[in-house]
Image (cartoon, rainbow, N blue to C red):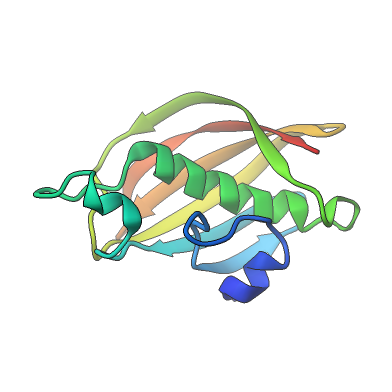
Amino acid sequence: MLNKEEIKNIIPQREPFLMIDEVESYVPGESAIAYKNVDEKEFYFQGHFPENPIMPGVLIVESLAQTGAVAILGMEENKGKNALFGGITNMKFKKMVVPGDKLKLEVKIIKKKGPIGIGEGIATVNGKLVAKGELTFAVV
């Protein structure tokens, strides 16, 4: 299990935009499983939405991307680099994420060619599907 400080040794994101709290496991270049504890004090709940706090879908996608970045940037040859979005395909949202939820984030790298790759991401809460789709990335 990696904590936030150990995650920061792999990916460049920092608070308030570090969107994963712990990494359960990862295989460099292949996959990662991480968690985001959705706290009512998250900065985005002030405006999304004050009377009905819901984690924005784009931040669920960012959480998946950061999880995938752990797998990609955990590779020895990618240390100190960054993984940028190249595209998002077939992303579907099935359930709202609210304060108190523990978001499980699973990314499997399904294709790599040079600095470009595709990760299949799945986000769940209590075993129920929240979001699923493919993330294209470029290592720079």
